[in-house]
Image 1 (cartoon, rainbow, N blue to C red):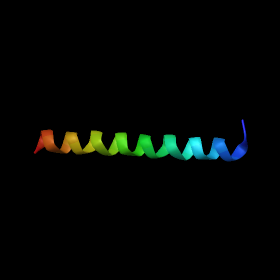
Image 2 (image 1 turned 90 degrees about the vertical axis):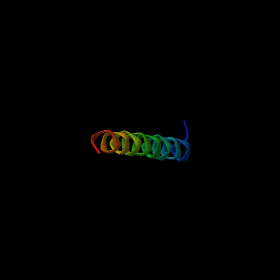
Image 3 (image 1 turned 180 degrees about the vertical axis):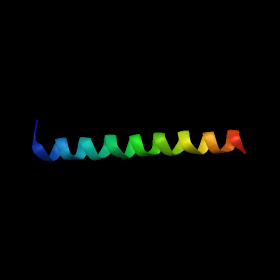
Image 4 (image 1 turned 30 degrees about the vertical axis):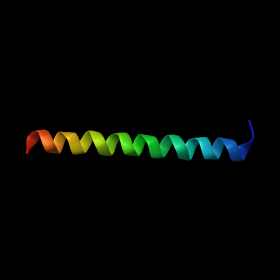
Length: 33
């Protein structure tokens, strides 16, 4: 696997994980509100 592709894949996974955590936190805030 080329290094550039690996870096791109990691950044993509990191952004997806950040979005997932953001939505999870937002839904928790909406539930508690």
